Length: 97
Image (cartoon, rainbow, N blue to C red; front, side):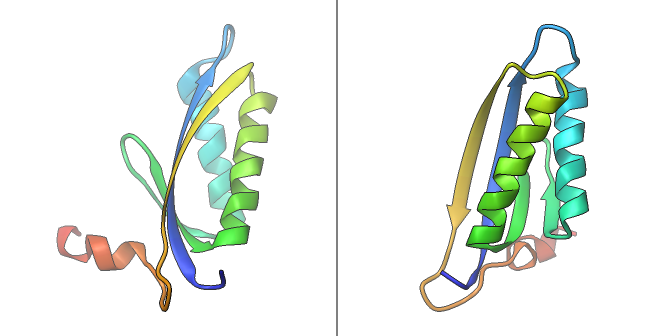
């Protein structure tokens, strides 16, 4: 699968000591540092890129959650892919910007 896809991720970190929102902010920092196109939304973040790159990024996001205080992470992922073409955030959002 070499086409560009959209993948949404929602992480819900469970912690006893750290603030959940601080951990989510650290997860978003990992996304920012990755260089992939993304859009932060109130309940999830949408990523744009090749499947394998985004799956590897999901692993790094989960690791960051553990590093910054989560003892467990619930991760919800949705994927939009096309057989013969790319998927972009812009094609769905252009009329709302």
